[in-house]
Length: 179
Image (cartoon, rainbow, N blue to C red; front, side, top):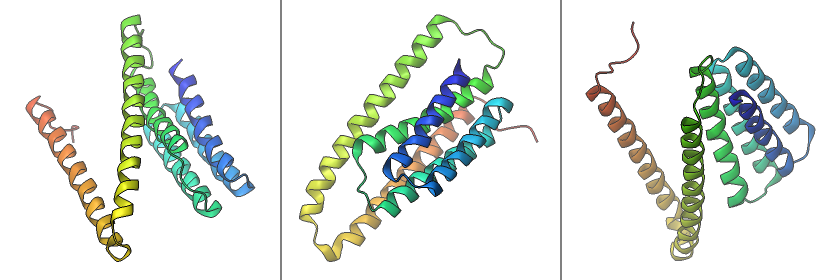
């Protein structure tokens, strides 16, 4: 069942860029992502699905850039969540390849997915409204500096999250893969 979900998320990731720019190079790039996803589904290799996710992201970025289309919040959230769930579901399929999953686990996974989806949508709407208000108040010459400060804030937040996750795993006694 989880392999079917991986394929479904891959199809969504294939279709969104084609919807933005329906030309054959976009479709060919998406087809390469589908082939990588299919290989990852068959072999249950995390690297193949991660490579497919990178191809889908490059395809979506190129399609929006070439089309000159503005990024819509709804499509961007759908794409981002599909990308997240593609990777997460593929990893779940790999880890539970021959296990029987109980109904409580399935309910928990569905609830978690719904919670992540709602939180991502709410965050996108909040950031979009704040960005609109901030864009009106920032002078044109200061915009690159504001963007650089925001990017630095995102990198620092990611570094803090990674460091705290590493600290959590060290406290639980996990020191990494055996060498």
